[in-house]
Image (cartoon, rainbow, N blue to C red; front, side, top):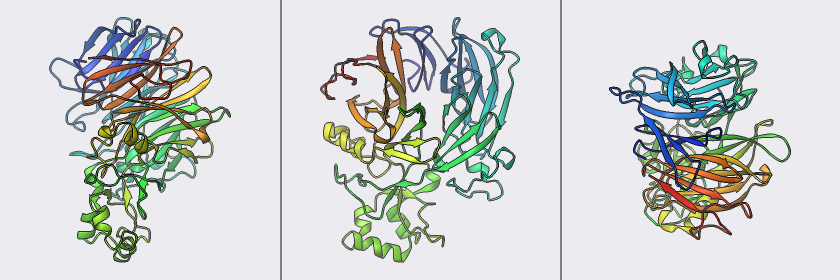
Length: 484
């Protein structure tokens, strides 16, 4: 893909796939999925090197596609939302939308368009939030000129009754303006509201359209399961006593289980921002680690926890269990798993534990955590997600950026999700965006790989749903095609 491949959106009305990469936006005709045809492509402008960040297709078939763009640096001026006429492939409406818009999503009923403004701190730290575009009166791309937008941050006036920011992990960079620490990452919209991942805050939030307020902010806590903590000892998955893993989700998808309840699928990638991380050995050397806690940790590791865990990157702002200003428990960055949250109770009902590392280590040891080089950071980094229904069963697909693979899970029974299949993508690939597609009576998964600038299409088998052939899965009967 000449302009790159990172995020995807499929238009089932036209069988066209919208692909964004660092260079711009491309449109592919997938009428014949084994022979994709480039329809058109474009950048933001001839003179301004803006980067696209997200793309979404209108679910009502009104011929509208939304794309967000950011300048460089991303905090210099507000990003831009463009609405595109998908029949003529031209921009028909655009507006400044907020700083660093990172995700754009239509609601299932097409009545609203939601943008997550991440506002990552750079030279200036700005308040993150969401922008909502009202599309109730829009019947086609010709009706867009009069639409309005509204920004909602995390200030007190935007919080619902009884809701505060205490559940959110924060850096406390400005105690008088805690909203500056909140950075919306990804969206999962319903007709009634939108769920938002707050990766740096280790939480999810829910914005209610009717109340026009944040009515839920849910901290995601941490996990305790086997993982590989070192980049110097090859594949070594095991329990690390005394160490927990923060969730820190990136992508989120909403789906309904067989019980009719709503659930969120979370990709717990981990956040490696320089502001809030340090090596465990540095925390000890700098006096940031509690002395008594270190003695206890040493006892768990034969008298020398630093030798066993020193290279592991941990949070510099978490793990202060007694609130005395130092670290009592190491908190690794990212759950290295996927997890399912019940949207009614707000509770996690299932997570994949150490499965992702165990599967990739067993099947493709050379690809494990980018050749083991990421094991002391966030491991396989599950990032991209897609949801699809095949023959009445709900499946989740997860892209592993550092393990260069895609995994498939059966989510039909959310509290007992099951691993189905996995397929490798090979050297140089780094799966980011995923899109589930139906063409005729066949189902496909599109995978965008940012580093390789390539798009890969998999056919999902109907007889025994699985991904790819390549000898990677159990009963996999589909095929793989790459598009450069």
